[in-house]
Image 1: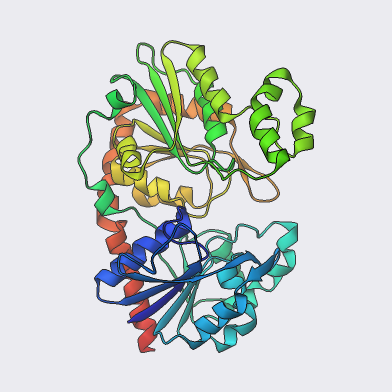
Image 2: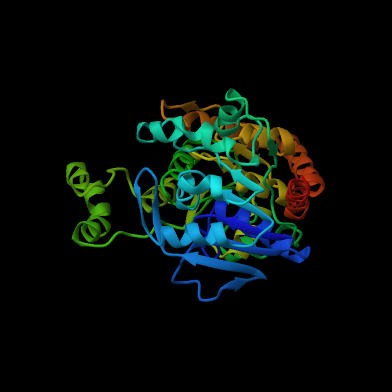
Length: 419
């Protein structure tokens, strides 16, 4: 089959949308299909084919609500004129979907839409956008959801839409079927006997690193065993200009001095920097340690394989890949109820959910004290952690490798093509 995918960002950009599309695209190429990804042009991408996947890059930014700029017409013409058997566009609120709204009726079928969670469904700025979403979904031959109970699939059901498939996310068998590197802890100065807590996610402020650091500082782990926290994440790109420079240089000093008003004038939060929270943990007790890192991918995998508990305190998600990755590595996980984390815990058998409130806009707000108590409980329940480890690893191998998931996408595409 000739398959055209569309997503706002793709390799070498890093993120959940990019990773799902990359894993599926590569495996479909390996199965003999011709796969092209229409996506944003990135200066760091210097080739037009990666791992056999062709890249059609466009200089477009924004979405329908914020406004779109750049090669919007060129992208539309490409999709309308390209010769393909199946077209799949991923994620609302991104230009690769929004730019096609005026011409959806002209896009050749079969066409598939992966809504990807509708993150702005409760945002006032997106009210009109989502009022029109049921009509837009009807224009597609098929919908793919990652969760069986979440805001996007529930909206589809409320409006009587039935042409859809639930396809879960997964984790790479090529990454996680590797031996554990016994030198990992020594390499990073982590005590061999420490109870190691890990989280992974970008440092956008929404992935729960701060809440977890606060919870870790409060937790009382079993006596006689040190505890260590690994906060892995790539930071957001810094803004440019005088205000951004001043904020970067002065923020640590202003926070420590209590001049939060100056920070607010600069447009930044007055919360302590993550590095300050980590330093505070490291000063607090000799049996407690923490590190804020941005590991290369292979070292992230080893962090999964060498930790004792994965904790996820994110504020907003759809179907978090890191929970599948924890299951793949045999690392028991504790997550707040964000996205379809509860469903992933049920599907994989790999962990537990710590209750947390949601605000009116749908963001999960973890309570550091509640999270600390749940971490304490799991740290003390060695047999439960062992059971989660074994179940998660087993169920991942049987159901949630990217090879198995790509096969299910292939079946959906082939069925639609034959209709």
